Length: 467
Image (cartoon, rainbow, N blue to C red; front, side):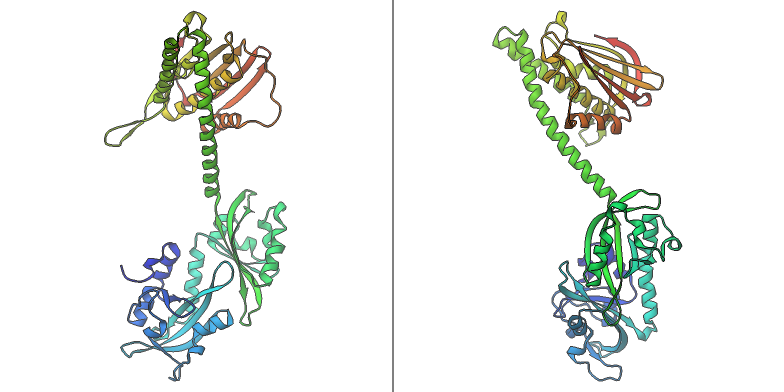
C-alpha cells in the first residue's frame, strides 16, 4: 500500500482519490498529511505523509516565471487570513525540471473549536486545459451525489441550494423548497433553534455534529445529525450557510433497543433471585427433612433448565445454527413446573391447552411472558400463598390464538396506582412488538386475570391437552 490517502478511512477520502484534479492536505507548517493519486501524478513523486514538506516536493513560481516567496504561497495566505484562497494561478516545478501551470485553491481546516489544524489544497492542471469551472462542476457533482442532505441558505434562512440527498431525506424537490424559509423543515417546538443558528453564523461560527429533529414533507419527524458552516464572500463577509444533515434514525433506534435490552437483562436477573427465593419457599411447604428440601429445589431448578433448553436454537459441532420448534403445552408446563406443589392431589396450577407448534423466536417471547406472569404471581399473587390457584387456558378463536392466565385464592388484589413498572412495559413490548398481539388485564376481587391475543398464523394449533 502506497503512502497516500489510503491511511485515511471512510467514504470521503475514497471520493477524493477518484478526482482527476490533484488534491492534498498539509499541517500548518506545510508538511503533507494527505494526497490523492492525481497529486502524485502532477508532482511526479509520492511524499511520505507527516515527513515531507511541500517545499521539498516542488518549487512555486509566478506565471511570469519569477519565484514565489514563501509568505505569498497559498498555504501562507490561507493561514494568515483564515479564509480560502481561490483561483491563484501559479507554476510548479517538479524534481525532474518539468514545469506545470495550475490554478491553486486552498482552504484552512478547522477543528471543533475553530482552531486551524491545516490546509487543504486543490490544484487544477492548466496544462491539460482543465478550467476552474470544470473543477467546480466536478465538486458540485460530488455534492449532488452525496447520500447526506446538503442545503444552502442565505443569511435570512431562505433556502438557496438543495441536493439529491436533501430530496431523499426530506421528500421535497428543489422547486418546492428553494426560495422558501428553512423553517418549513423545523418542528414547531424547535423554531427557536433557527434564530440561534443564524446568530452564530453571522459571527462566523461553525456548528458541527448537532443532533436534532427535523420534519419530512409528510409530517414525519426525523432524527438527524446536523453540521452548519458559514458561506463567505471574497471579502470574508458571511452571506449564507451550508448545512449537512445525516439521518440518524436507525442509530437512535439501535441505541434505544440496546438500552431496552440492558434493562431487560437487569430485570431478568432480579427475577432470577426472586424465582430462587420462591422455589425454596414452595419446596419448604412440602419438605419434611433437609434432604427432601434439597431434592425438591433440585427438581425445580432442573425444570427451569428444561424450559430454557426449549427456547434456544441448537448449534452443531460445525457451528451451524438449527432453529427448533417446540410444543406450546410442553413449554408452558416446563416454565410453571418450579411453582407447582409437590403433591398432585393439591395441584395449584392447571393447564388446558390447544397444543401448538411454535418456532424458537415465538417460543422465546411466549416463555418470557409466562415466566413474568409466574414470577409476579409468586411474589404478589396466587402462587405466594399455599391455597392460591392458577388456571392457564390456551386455544384458537378464528384468526386469533388466545392465552388466558387466571389467578384465584391469593391475597386481595387492586388496580395498581402510578406509573407502570419495567416488567409491565417489557410485557407490553413483547406482546405488541415481538408477537404482534394484544394484552388485557383485569384486577378481579378473587385474583388477577390476563388475556393475551396473538395472530393465529404465528401459532400452529394441534390437539387439546390438559393437566
